[in-house]
Image 1 (tube, rainbow, N blue to C red):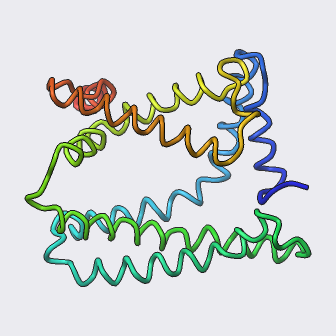
Image 2: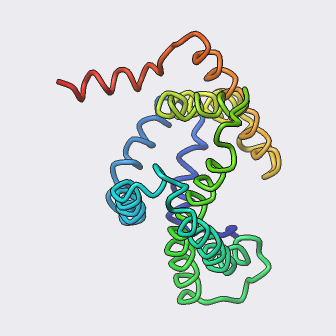
Image 3: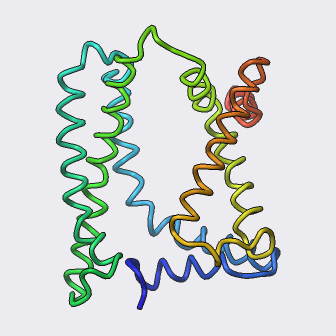
Length: 218
């Protein structure tokens, strides 16, 4: 019995189990071409919320918006958690006697309330910035260095995950548990922080950020 997601998600997952790298790349390319426009509706609201937050400089001036950030953090995370409970129960197989309507409703609720969760986490980070202002240690600087090179390290992490998990590379993807995959994710993130900090100490910019700036300036 599938855990949580339906045939659409399972089909995408199956494209990641192909053992031939060229075949896997071609299949995934067509997956992206097909599913990106279909699933873009999930991305657009989050982008619009981000534009509004940037427009009113809510995160740029966290002290001036502290009350708003506290409200957004509390209600955003509460709404997101509550909205994700039905989907979590289905995914973990604690709730199995549901019909198609309930499944669609749970997935929609999970997606819609997820935007509130994103706003809540963003507000929480803004509050953390207020707390840490003037107290930036080496770890905080390393995290900031990673954020300044986010595009480069997104690609770096993707490559590492391929080497570790893909069936035509490390092959661990089909052999490890959920906990194992979580530990690998933390491990890859930790390496990213160390490398980003090394680049920061030597004033090395993210290569893809530099490339993007040059191309966008044309």
